Image (cartoon, rainbow, N blue to C red; front, side, top):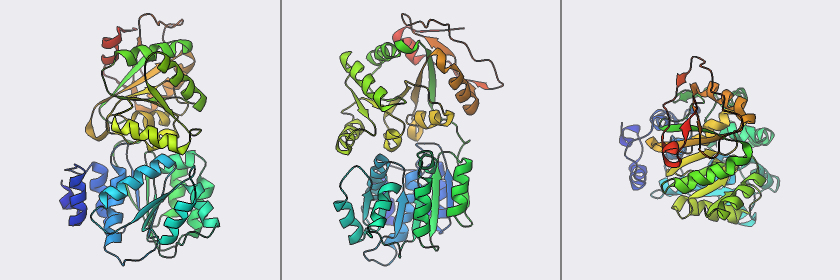
Length: 405
């Protein structure tokens, strides 16, 4: 299937071609025609499958064909500042050949430029819930001509505690509107939000829920907790050039890990909520451009990282929520590419890894790096009628590891 077959306007097809895309992804194939028809829609697909274009292209086509005027006509709610900037850049890229304006509204920066954009009447506003409410309380926002609402990354928005803010925003919007909700997973909480926000919606689900993307190779390295930093440094020093995204549970842990890696000669950078917005923007720009190869992030800060070239994702800390693992490793192997998901597993995290394997429907062999053998031999997962994962060779081959049997 081609983009031409989806019913998009020539100006949008030109922009898609400018971005280098020849064929729509499965979520785009299914969602775009429904969105163009004005249907309310729930879209569920793995991270990195092109959800942003699935709603942005129909929005641009609808707004470009309507009456021009200085008014907010499409609102896109997102959980983080980084994702707001990412979606804004998509609006500008896909809308370069149409007369549609877009602005982003999020915390951590001054309100005055955002106030000017809202009062001037940007056609599309991409916003985080908290900052949008600040503007609403100050009378800066006029929803009277709103036509489209998108709830993007709805699962993360609810996980971050934004449900009350989202409900307040929904109560201020016109009842007559098109609403689209996109989420990597559809939890009971997301279902409840959909029932409140959508009317007679269609559903598009691509792939099995909570399943890592195709093309991800999973590597589990067993190691004592205090040896994790040394193992990671050895792997990073041995790996070929390429971008690596490392996840820690805490902001303090991210900073501490960056300090260690830099002492080992690895130019790592951290991004998390305590960093100034200007620092976060510079760091992300460097990572996207390839000027920075190693980025250490917390889960919340990483929600806006949309980089096709990430070759390895590292779980320095195993997440407590199995679905977070799926979100994390979805940052590699995007758009049909292949990638590596490396997890450093200490004995206190064995049960967490077992929960992840149950969720994704696979078991992963535990590997050991010579010189960093854990004090407790890694417990191999028992077969649970799950599909065995393909043995991972890439990390072992580079650093001399061996599999525990």
